[in-house]
Image (cartoon, rainbow over the protein chains, first blue to last red):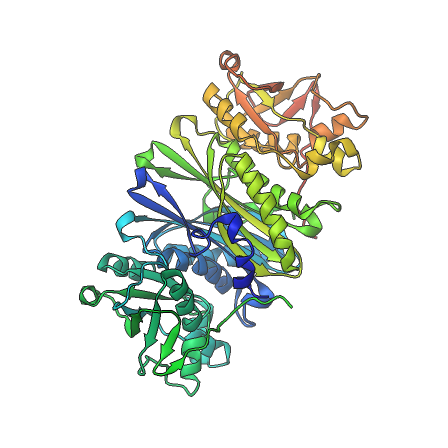
Length: 285
Length: 285
């Protein structure tokens, strides 16, 4: 069983709509604003590649939650950090990295919890705020929209697989908070961040929006042999994936790559072939 | 080193004021409202006594964060849960317990994260909202105020030590959210929840408010031999500890026990004796 299947088993407890997005939503100021909130658990054995510094672990921990806030088109307002520490002296560099990442996203670490734990475990919560009209979710993609991606899909996996030039893409993902707000204001119809790979993210958005995708033959690949595999199935990049009507696409003033378009139906095609629905997943044996 | 000392080592990174309370604060609606937020990490070996059901673990996880919200005088608005699971089938009863606790506090579980983890680890985040004028913190206690406690201090430790009649106090702490709002509206000057014991909480409040406490000889003890020790030094009760001017005390319409009063100076006295500054603490060897 993987984490997506497991989430399905508690959908009735939390609500179908609530479990369809990375962030929960809460209306503020009579609904004029939406507050988004998200939490993410990372731990050393499975989430922090060997060779990462503690500063980078702190950065990454804040980044994964701030990336979820970015995917809603929201401005982050606060980060909380719960750290389960095997060695207490690891706390300070971890917090320094998290504080730096929060600052780079225009927000701050406002509090947290400290605990002792056999395996280093960091859980971040991020909050953000967005005007209701610009609030983006995984639902909303419409047939005819372009589908676009930011960043360098596949770079994090390339770093993990030993390509030193992409190491920083792996250990210091940059949450696309300012880009996300620009995309939302330009008129994106749906948006999410790509934590587990482009393919599985497209399938998630396809299911949430009730549409299908056709990818272009020409994708913005890295200049390496494994580029296509990494682009579609590599996780850890934390770029943004979004859909936008053609006539609004021209308003975009941030660099993005058009990777395909939205079509009637379901699933993800490339030419005549179905793109596999796989990517990074937590698996219980 | 314990968790309070460790927190001291990163105070400069987060801010002195921000690390003095269990909740972080964020102004809403031009400062008319304060949004409070808090996060807590629990794991099986150190936080869930043997014999607890998974439903109770979920309840307790939500309760500890909702108790922090209660201590601000705030109404909870949202709970997020990150669960690191050794066995995926534990998720559903845990979530059912957490959902029940949130519901009992007038809020809901709005989202979370699921992860695989060798040791069951649950991290809850709770948000809440309170009008600025009723927002309670650890600062604000003034000489001459009464100091009061809700609930049954020591009962959770009694349950942990094998007294079956107090088992539920241990495994199903009831966040005092409605009581907390009543106390705040009556005019409490400072408030916190008692997670680690009355004595250590009084010392925390003493330091935050820059005042001292004198406890009464007659304390509302449990009818057991260890009652005084448990009252002062037992953790896990999640009652509220607060200070309130005498003339506002009469407005209180919830059951509380007066346990002492606020005096000039520092520390915690009982008669001529200094109360020890100890309680539950996470310790790194």
